[in-house]
Image (cartoon, helix red, strand yellow):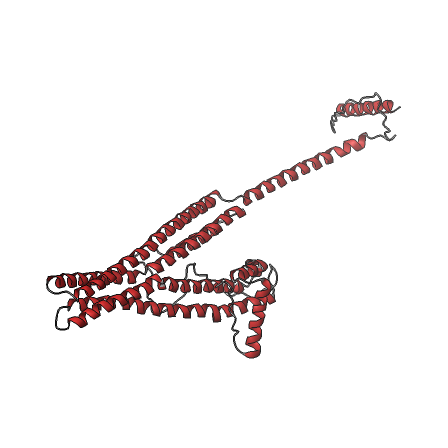
Length: 431
């Protein structure tokens, strides 16, 4: 029964199309597939479907065309978005070039640091050997007469003068302080190398990342120069300032205050960070600057005393054999021995390195202060670093837990508001 109804539909469609073609009006062309009649059971409606099928033709074609166009547009849009997420090959190449230069600088600073550490130990040993030998010869010359006296006192005087000249140069360059500078430079360049690697592996570096990396490299080169002549850091500055190895933060323009929560930030977190900055300024930075001033003063005294004592010893040995020969011999021997002790205290104790360490620690706390203030001065919280992540970084840098950091801020706030004085606790637990 179903096969008979299907055949009647096909014949009626063919008949209608032939009639329309005779009248000169072609409405549609439908190519119906051949239907298999064997074992197929279809129940078609009794009404005539040809007009409805013919009327649906243009609409069906329009719908199909619209669907294809939408699919093509979405494909283009997806391909465009994927292309925008792909990093610029030139940016990646520049970051790789900077990373290679940073790795070379790490190697250079490590090698030069080892070389200057050898300078410190070798010069210290050589100068002390020369000084003690000259003192011994001065003592022997005091018991001699005639030719041996002249030879011994001349040799002792020349050795003291040589030791004086070497001490002046050594005290001027401060090898132990140079070694500490190279250690800090190598460590900071390693940190920069790791940050560039993180930027490359995180996904989508931009030209601003390249510019930021270049600024950091140049700032480190300026803070820790390799040459000794012309650009060497002042070893005896008039004022002690924290070391600065980072590019200066740009001053942000004042903008209308926006919402203070979001992106991990809240009003409580901002107040906590302000209290931490206050403690860093009042306690940690100031304390290390105070210690740096003490180390610098001690280093100045020792660096002047050493050459002065060897010079006095040279003068004493030069007057041996005269009417004041006994006093001259005593001055030559005692001053030489004291010069050896002073030299050992200064360069064996690495007082210059201690001064540089205090200056570097003060710079570390100054960097933390500027980083926190830079985030707080940014009015739009969405442009800040994530608040929770930033709080964790600050706590780790200070050697504290998150609860310990909150307790520090609470204690500082209570002491300043209730007692009107600063707390005695330092912000850093590391050093």
